[in-house]
Amino acid sequence: MTWPTMRAVVIRESLTTGELPEAFSGREARRYPHLLDERTPIEIIELTVPADQAPGLALELSAALKPRLYYAHLLNEARMLVAFPHTVVDIPRGDQEAIAHARSVGALFDIPDEQMRFAEMWDTDHPDAPAQPTADAR
Image (cartoon, rainbow, N blue to C red; front, side, top):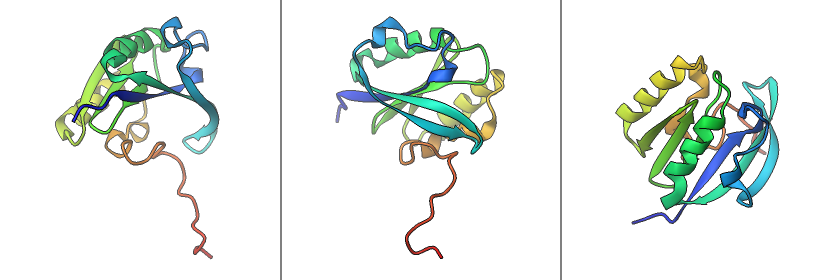
């Protein structure tokens, strides 16, 4: 099955200008606050992009990222594109070798390993976030 769109997730503070590249104009879906590593306040920008444009848009993002500590990603049910500064890594869902490769690339940009939990990102938007208490927790 072909997935027609991908969801892009970008940390506003990761962008060198604080703004998305022009190619993302009009694609923004929502913005919301998040605590990175449970202590650093950031703003998440989510966008929807056509899957056939995602590789080019990932390259645009990679050129707009600060030179260390950050990445952005685009994903759908089958694939994730991770944009690091001037580099994009393609991860097919479930491909552990590609995930390990992406983590090694991220390490080159001083990204903490615990912030690169790519295998979990298909099911959990922010696997670094603290577990939310359930209604049954007392």
